[in-house]
Each structure stands twice: as C-alpha cells, then as structure tokens.
Length: 139
Image (cartoon, rainbow, N blue to C red; front, side, top):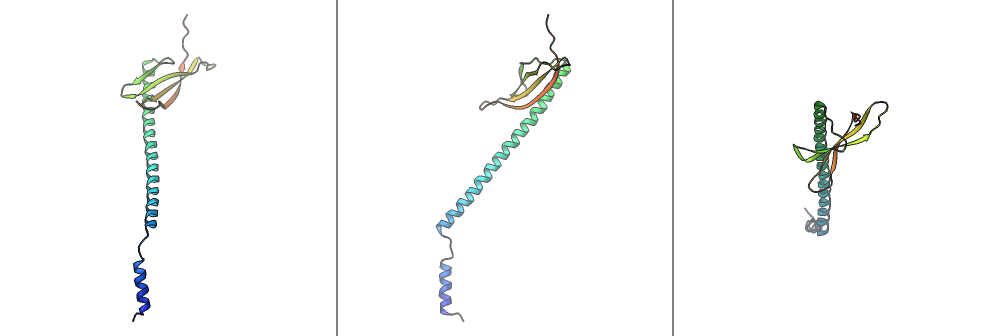
C-alpha cells in the first residue's frame, strides 16, 4: 500500500516539524515589541484623559470663582492670588492683560487656575479673560 520511500520521508518530515530556537526567539521579540507599543499608547491615552478631566474641573472652578466675585461685587485686583479650598493643589491668580480698552473705561484681566503639584512644574489648567471696570484713580 505505501512505498518504503514514502514512509521514510514521512518519518523525516515528522522529526523536523518543530520550530528552531531562532524562530521562537524571533517570535518572542515580535510579541514583546507589540506589547511595549500597546502599553506606551495606553499610557499616553490615560495621561491625556487625566489632563482633560483636570482641565474640565479647573474650568468649572474658574467659573465658580468669577461668579462668586461678581455676585459679591468685589473683583480681585491684578496681581492677587489665592488657593482653592476644595483642591489644595490648585491656586488662582489674576493678571492685567490690557489697561486701556478705548473708548470703554474698563480693563481686561486674565484669571488663571494653576495646578501646583508637590513635584514637577506648575501647569495652567484654565485661563479666562474678563472685562472689568477700570480701577478708580485715587486722589
């Protein structure tokens, strides 16, 4: 039924059916490269999501600060800073952007909410420019 030569060649092909060490190591290198690239992409994506969430929260806090100042009728002067009580790592600061907004007696002020982590550099999370009444000159 089978020829003697076909049985011998079948035995030889069965003996050599496995992978060599070089092929196994090459496959592992390809898998490791794929895994590292996936982890790096995931890490960058997670960092971006965390920053976006922090910026949204800072925008809400900036809106609350400005609404509170207008409700109280007391806008802070340019150069003033403070911390946000509910978030100890966040602070706010007010800067003068333009003092002469002709012909309107007003000034443009920038309100920034800044994240000041224990380690690392401070990062501005939100920045809003508002039009405020011009400062009254003292006589």
